[in-house]
Length: 217
Image 1 (cartoon, rainbow, N blue to C red):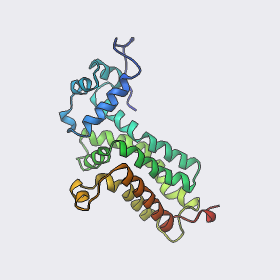
Image 2 (spheres, rainbow, N blue to C red):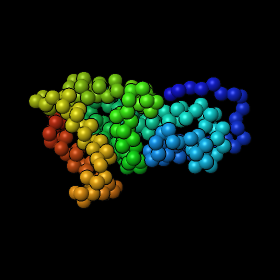
Image 3 (spheres, rainbow, N blue to C red):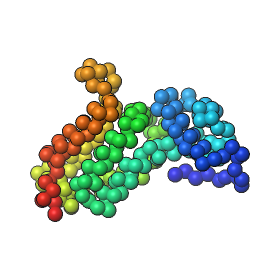
Image 4 (tube, rainbow, N blue to C red):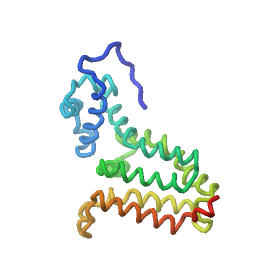
């Protein structure tokens, strides 16, 4: 994460909740308002804290945005590292389970990522997002290729690269699909629907591209 030089002493209104309040309210604003329209003062007012706290904890708006991205994807990052340490079918599927659970809390976040990745590579948001994602891209490559193949988790007659595309598609589509398209098909991203979809997707993977558990040993 970006580090910043901090002056000695803390602002008076500091408490253990301030940093988290800023992250949560910044996330709400960044996922609903264009980045360049969000100001530090607006974030601080939403969080009900002194604007100086943004500088204290994050340095500036860019530092806060980077932190929002990092903390949002951190649960998935932890699952990926667990998969690398113990390449089991359960740990592989738990990455998707964790993603669905976390994104249900903030369903606008995947859409924000989708929008940012369509921006020019020189855009501030794109640079910050790629900086954060670089921390998980290499581990994810290990999970989706070397680990899955070497641990006998994937079926021998499937292509790992195509499995990777299918896996990400199953994870991302419900959250980045146009709302009008979902509505057209009578789909509402409720907790019950997402839970059923998750188990359905897991069954698709276990039947289609993953080895039966007794063959993985």
